[in-house]
Length: 289
Image (cartoon, one colour):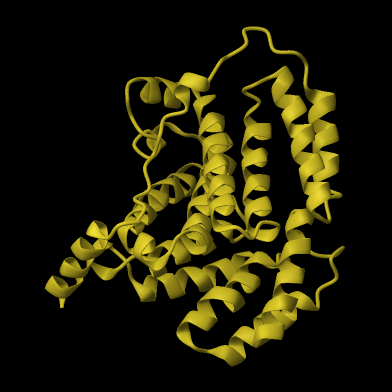
């Protein structure tokens, strides 16, 4: 069986049109300002816009506000990370074209990498030639958002941007995602409200067994995600949309999606624009089941 899988992988790699994902350094674009302008007011305004973004126009307005922060301070760690987060949302919730989705998800990763690059130890490792996942041990608790969003962007590109042959060729990237998740657990074990565990579940569920994938581990992490994510939509939305449907448990999928679709948007804790997406997407999924 292993030989059959390896033969299939080799065949797919040789197929024309298959896209192997490559990492390209963006460090040469990184320009530090010795005396950046004060950004407290600008960042507060951007966060306020994020908290009100209920549609594509609102998300893009919030992204513009974050860009104003970066115009004053190109290495504002939080602005970079959350701009990456909003690129993910724009790619999955408001973009249809596959190539445009990929563009958003890859841009999200670049913003997250720039956020990591603010860390002096990470910068030194990157400048010495290490790739982001190779430099991950230098990252600290304040880098947790950038690490997590980098992994989420990767997973969305895999799910929504890649064809099946592309997924088979690039599935090993999930191991790089696990590297970042492991570092988050080391430096910020309480971070994420179940999102880290959810991301682990995706990685272990997608990876084939010979690359470290394990459905039992994936299932255990999904349970942890739901347990830790009380008051949040993401874990049960993800379990209903992905996990239960992959395993064929459509009744459980409906239960989770019905729960998400029926929540009061003002009472759940996910970032506001993501609440809108999870609830709307759950309703759309239910219509198709």
